[in-house]
Image (cartoon, rainbow, N blue to C red; front, side, top):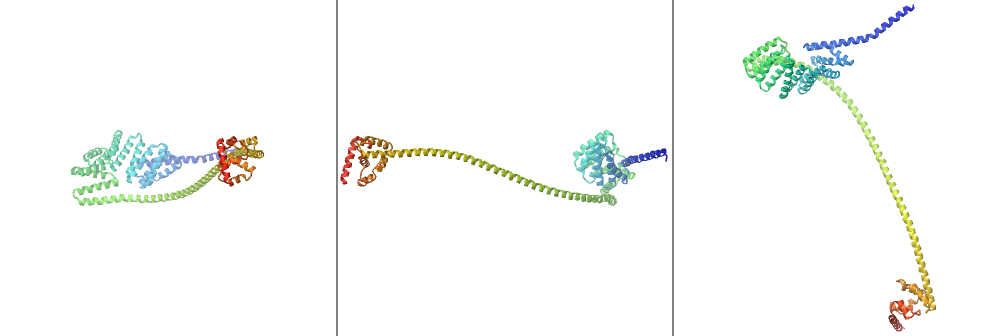
Length: 518
């Protein structure tokens, strides 16, 4: 194979490979366009009031845009998926689609899709009898429309209608006034006609039939062929309530002719038959009333059949939802049990840690108290040691003082005894007596000391005297002891502490007692 041929084959393979890489991107772009076309087609049919119940491709478009995270296209796709679901009588699925449309619309700033979604949610709530909740969604839709006055007028008119249903007439008239002003400003005849019609309904419920007629006369020129039968029906109802047969027959005939010209909804047909029944009964035409009643029942059964089928679907969906909810609740219960178990373990751990901390704190507190007590004991021991040392020093000093005193007393006693011995040998020795007197007669107990010293020198003498002369007085006894020394009369007086005259009396008394005892 030549080199040029090889190059051509390689180049061809490169081109094929490049085309292969480009195919997915081209296919993806083509599918995006196809899905967007599906949404546009369903939108056009829905706005033209055509049947969209078989437009199932919108669901594929919705899923595709969500998976691609193309929320700008997902918002309208979700909105018209809800419209198709509602046309299929799948109201719960329709509600979910509308909620998704509102969510995606708000995410990307598509206020139109969000406003339509809120309005259609209000319609579903109104159909299910939740008028008070519907008011909230209609108000939200009105806010989302912003500068679109015609759309806002339609939303405010819906809010007014819900207030009429729940008997809030003051609020209803406020919103009707706002809606009428916006509709007239934008020359929206359809909305203006609906507002005048709602005015008439409110006035009829308040038994203000003249005002109701005035509003209905303003409604009639504004309605199109499709809504004309309803306006004529409302006029006929008012004249029936007023019992004005001529006007009643006129508008009844026009209403029946208008119904034949358009394909009316089953609900409108049921309302017409209900009116015809009342009209026949008012004039006593019971046969016609019976026929109208049969037709009314048939229409009612058709409506009820649709509602029953829808109810079955809703019950099944509710069952599926409850099954999912139960499964979720079981999972949540398991998680809660696990969380409770972990919480209990954590609480137990916290309690254990708290107990350990408290025990440690208590141990530290006890140790601190023990250390404080030991320190206090040490201080007390030191103080006691100091006190003992001080007491020891005091005792030693006292002992020294006592020893010195005893020594002095002993030496004094020895000195007294020596004095007595000297006086015993020489009773007239004046120096010895002076020393004796100095040693004995300084304290209060000098006579006791004298007797002790005398007894030491002359043992048994004192006892003998007291035994031989028991009636001696104290002064006579003392004179008797002093008589062992050769003392002058004045010395006797000085030692005894009396006068010389008393000394003589004591001596004379002592001599007499001694003579008597001989």
